[in-house]
Length: 335
Image 1 (tube, rainbow, N blue to C red):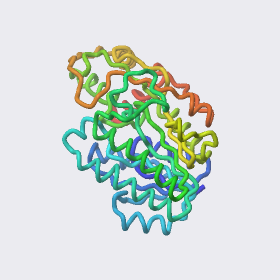
Image 2 (image 1 turned 60 degrees about the vertical axis):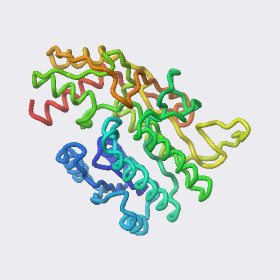
Image 3 (image 1 turned 45 degrees about the vertical axis):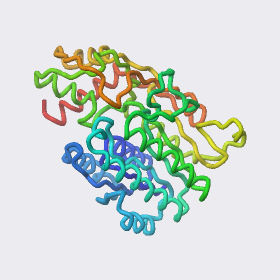
């Protein structure tokens, strides 16, 4: 296939593009290479991709209507994997307009491109954050997502709804994947694992919010990418059993689906830190802090729906995944 991957310089975008190229697909990747975190890391990811045949990189902002319209007009894409977004719950507290521009305007240009150019399947990134103040575990696609507690979460829920409109009005097949705490080699510097490893190696204390009582459904990058590709290969179709009188929140009478994609095995944060300490051979100095606004205390993904649909089965525990990140971190930074 000829696949457009947005946010290709990002953590998940680059890993997904590698797998697409390895299986013989052609990838056109776009990214605006912004400075939300170290742009040199993003450029290094792109450089790695550029060593493979079948890859083309274009520096572009998804929110630019003119550039995106031209891209779709000339691109002749079969499918689209939309991963470009302004990430981060905490960042949204102080930079709200960045989320409006990237996550809403940027998604709308992608939907318009899919609408006008007969894209066979749009797979896009949603987030576990849409569950908001829901405390029922595990989080299921059958649960309500009507009470987000961060602007980031609200934009991701909006993406799901926008995609449904385009599926209903224009027949654009789309699948949203609600990611749960993705980690692994080439990961994001604003995420907990990266920060913890960096601080411990530098002899600095780590900040642990929620007084260390949080649990997270950590999901290794290879499992995430496997789920993305399996989903991409099975375009969303209408649910023939969908009942408007008792609607299934995860499907529709239109070609639209949403799924959780996570590890399914939440890990208490102290256990996660202990795993990092073992890998590094160093103890962490821990500052226990209150919950941050917009954060949730526990996450756990019910991934049965995605398993039933595409055979998604995560296989990588943190005992395997964390050492692989540490190995990459030491090599990349020469530590």
